[in-house]
Image (cartoon, rainbow, N blue to C red):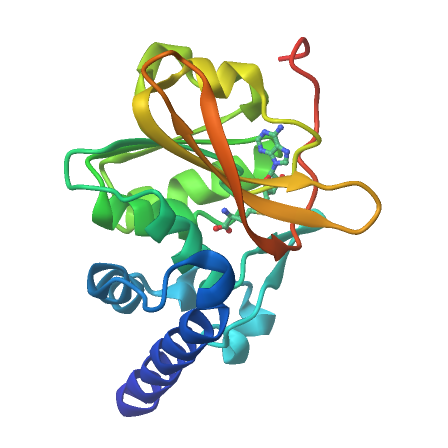
Length: 225
Ligand code: SAH
């Protein structure tokens, strides 16, 4: 069993390397960072997927986690994480905790992680799961992530794992100058672009599109907590 699991994980790592190579023209990143691959080995994705999907846990695919939500595709998780350029000191804000898998990876690579989930049941499940797994540096709360987590700001990095119509202003405000944001943004009738934003010293977010992606929608408005 352990041997089989090790093989599944290695197969996923190989797939991620191939996907990075194949998308390098668009993303500008030709290989996954070894630290991210190590974090992917460390975080047991099989503890973040529902029982019925256990045999798919190490596939490079998004899976349903209930409430109409998904745990994202590992390639997209790795790509978004790499774009954040985290250090062990980084303070990170995540919007869309979902299963908690992305939050756990951030917990492996950064200093403190603050993650907000709008579905209270998912927030509660992820919080318990991450606590049980010993991620003391990952903080989860239920709420509308469009408002950010002002008490814990400023952040070195912000990652939004649901697709937005626009980049929520509160999230830009809570990013430090020089900080990085990754967010899927709707691009009209044909889909979504993963957008990388870097905040300048002047407070402006300079953005560029990285890749076409598919995410569940970021719900809620700025004025409804
Ligand atoms: N990062 C997750 C995948 C998340 S799927 C993982 O690793 O499993 C996107 C999540 O964003 C869903 O759980 C959805 O409920 C949540 N979401 C959507 N709009 C939100 C909002 N305004 N604030 C916080 N979470 C939101």
